[in-house]
Length: 350
Ligand code: GGG
Image 1 (cartoon, protein in one colour):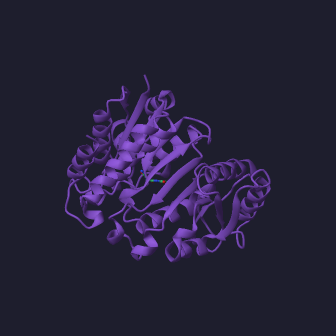
Image 2 (cartoon, rainbow, N blue to C red):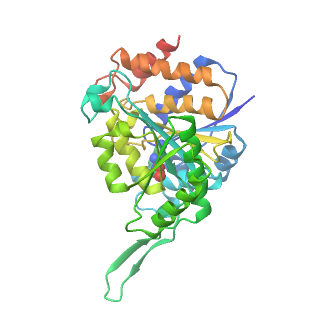
Image 3 (cartoon, rainbow, N blue to C red):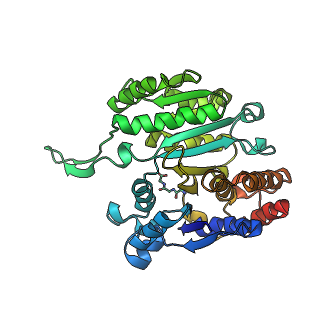
């Protein structure tokens, strides 16, 4: 029996995870579930955002459902104890380097998109974000300059093996979609990006069937709002992918609609599944959060880690039906609650 680790985390994490769990219970797929503490919730209970027992649970699980981390009451802690270190630690410890963030407009959400309806409805793209390198993991610190100024630094680095494996994941993803890969970097300014571009070009030799293009990240940000229909798969680094996927989410209605899968290899079944949004402490506990991204993360989990494409399709169709019926949480311009959105998805599943 497959074991699912449920790490709900902070803020709206528990609320949206509860709706995802209701969907899983309704499908009755025979999983075992085990809950673990993570993020600020774990720090307050154990003194660490990623306690050893949570890491052990994640390692023995078949898949991990992750809500969100982030807690303003932890803002003054040293960086290694902040809630966000839990998700960075899980990604690193489990070698979850490939983050799939699909963005597609659900019919009916044209009015919620930041773009004109005809531009928004052309969106069907996948952002593949590298997760184990970049400024997130380079040496960082605070120091004082010779003239007495405080100076913060974060070292950005990628080695060629790290770039090659995400490039391969990008080409493989493009092969399973429409055969187009756009590699996003800042090679006109950054050495890491020059290496990125060189390695992507070298890797392309094994994928003559894929149409490869390169784009600077500033241009990619502009093209995502000007003509997002041109993109199929975008492969990019940790920082650029973090930013571009939040931008893409507003092009399809809301950050509350984007699910993600973090995988250790394009062939591997181990995965962590989470909405791309954070803990949204400003609305936590108010029943306002949109659970769709979390519910859609369950669909990604069923498809990628558990080889269950049929229930995954059912979940996606149920979310689409709920949206089609006009159910809208506040982020989508409506007044429905988290629970009411969950109810609508469950009703459509039945
Ligand atoms: N569910 C995503 C989440 O909790 N995000 C908070 C966060 O700190 N994420 C860091 C990142 O995605 O790099």
